[in-house]
Image (tube, rainbow, N blue to C red; front, side):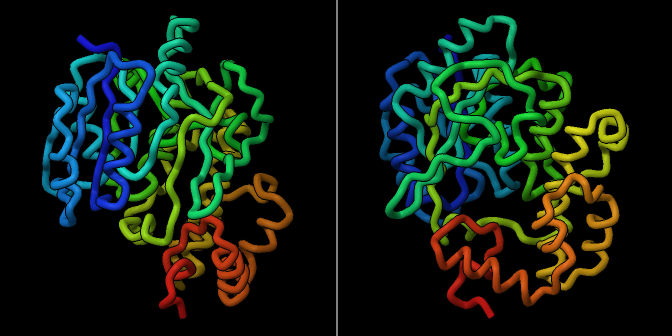
Length: 312
């Protein structure tokens, strides 16, 4: 039995999936299995996946059900109780798994592990901004306290003992976009994170990487299940409010006043920076202008219209 199961979820990632799989096969640690879940891809992803003949690869194809369902399927099919997630358009440094296993051995009582991430643009590699310095060390961190600038967990940098699901539950399949953040909240409420403070995961960013993202607000998290936790923990409240802030901006951009009022009404203004407080009360045209400027600079923007040449 392998020591770790790598779960790769794929939906229309023909541009990236070869490099994603190859980055796992290139690992310095080799005692793993790879479970690839093709979540109903309609491009050439399957053809590319099937070019690999490594016996450690197990391929599963299912109708399109969303990232949450794909990850749940992969975890259920895993032959180990220790899994690492990887999206079908991201890659790992060749020492990622070795570092995860070493951290697991050094912190035998821990359940959740992660490493630092960088965004890979066409011409540059940009480490994400955490609210602590990247120092190469390994330490135990509280999720909410250490996710003030960027999430400590991502869907390509987390490894965990599947026993935690008895406490957190599986990925919520009713959420089509933002299901990962919903899961990180549940993990953060109960489990500390062993964090490898070194960039070992690369998120590939391009305009096309947003092509499969859901911008339907009804498919987004409501963040309405954590009232008690928010009341008792200011750091949980601040973290969730920052996510509500992002959805409030999306609501404003989509002229959805009902959704805007829902998210805006639940935000404690002290959770936001001065700039965020100004933006959340700004008219749509100002938001579009500022975000378009950011997109033109080649930086990551989570709003498809602002990354598209067809933007109005």
